[in-house]
Image (cartoon, rainbow, N blue to C red):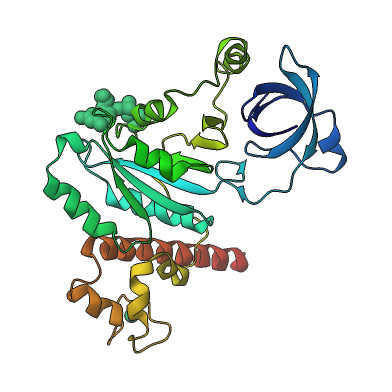
Length: 303
Ligand code: GDP
Ligand code: ZN
């Protein structure tokens, strides 16, 4: 039987078998042998040892499509970033960092703006303009009014999605809406899952419907861009691409260079000012990090 590892706690692995339920499994040393550790998100084959109590053994790890490092989880297909249209106002700097981090790990992004019930239509239009050429899909929803929930479900269908967002934007409210009607955690199965809840936070997949999972990523409030060279940064801005051919220099960073197609497009409002401003901020941060690393190295050499 095949399932998805949704959670691992203290030597037990919880495997969701669609239309069946969650089995509490052991791994029987098969992983120690080939030196791999099962990860949340892994597709596995199990043998059932006790059908009534939903117990079994993981007998095989199926090939991984991908592995995410932060947090460690396998086979994530995409990311859903949740922000609010207001209360709190979107932090575009944080949002763009999220986008870069997710894209860096090869994930497509859906941006979901919640709380449309407390903002005017103009605010939504303004936000849409910022991200319309960013290569992400954009959704506007309201957990309070239960509006747009079906659109989110459709975007998540049959995929495993990492969900992230700052606190206060309504992430828990939306995740609750998405889980409504999910019959997975009933009776005994629920008791098995609950057993691990009191321990420290682990990454965990939540089944939304058969074959559809989300992973609630702990809320982070600030992020540093990791392991990106400043020259690579522009690759995370799809809206720059149509204009880069017009730059005089092939290596143009679109910052101080003369005759820059991207800056021209910015002046002509083809590229949004907020997106470009964050780009220059991040570029500056990466540049600083690189020169700090260089001077540390120099000092090291002198010793
Ligand atoms: P989280 O910190 O992102 O998990 O956010 P919560 O789900 O705990 O919600 C934070 C606050 O926003 C709570 O007071 C919610 O009642 C409120 N909230 C959540 N969704 C909506 C919404 O769609 N509209 C409005 N007006 N408030 C919402
Ligand atoms: Zn340029």
